[in-house]
Image 1 (tube, rainbow, N blue to C red):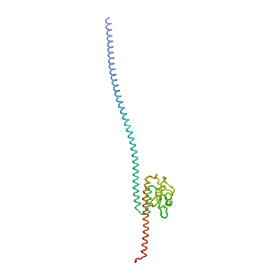
Image 2 (tube, helix red, strand yellow):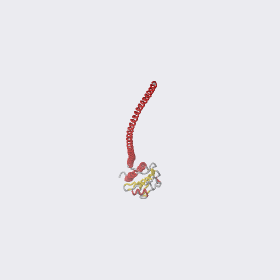
Image 3 (cartoon, rainbow, N blue to C red):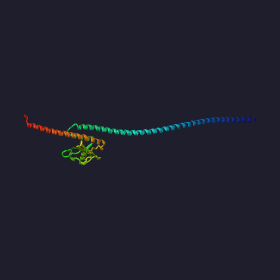
Image 4 (cartoon, one colour):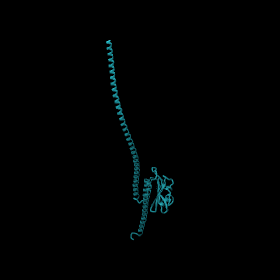
Length: 275
């Protein structure tokens, strides 16, 4: 009987020890789980805190990006304005440079016009000016004949001079331009009617008609007449008219001088060396 009691006591103690060990394991596992839970909660708090900071940083970055985008738009707009101004400046610079070149060429041409008193040379120089400065391809130079009152073509470019008809002063496009002193100009580039030029530039000295420059066609590379061309018409008309008039006066004076000298020589021969 006592042996059974001891055996049952041993079993009870064994069960108790297993229960104690199991309880201890549960306590340890519970403690371990509590630590893990605390760690997880701590990490969640840190994550939440980091998420808030990240959201704040993200918002700041978005605001900065919007600010930079606005600055980019402003810079692009200013660049477009500057580019437009640069194009205008470049265009104006090209115009001024072209005007300066033309004025320099006109100065040289006017110097050449007034450097000779030969009518043929003056007409030749005028032809070169009309080609190089105005860009005319077909044109004629008329000179007023005071005896007949007609404007006669004395030189031409692009066609034979005989094809250009005489023009009565005050009649037709050329005659009216010379009579009034007003340049006649159309919007056309060519004219096949040699009595109706696209441009008629009168050559006058004060109120005295000298002649005209009649343009019937422009060079292929010239699109049309510019405001500078109209200024050149005025300047060329004055210089060419003065040069032709001066050459005519010189030619007339030379002829008169030659006639007078011939008359003096004739009188000298008739009177003899001893008289």
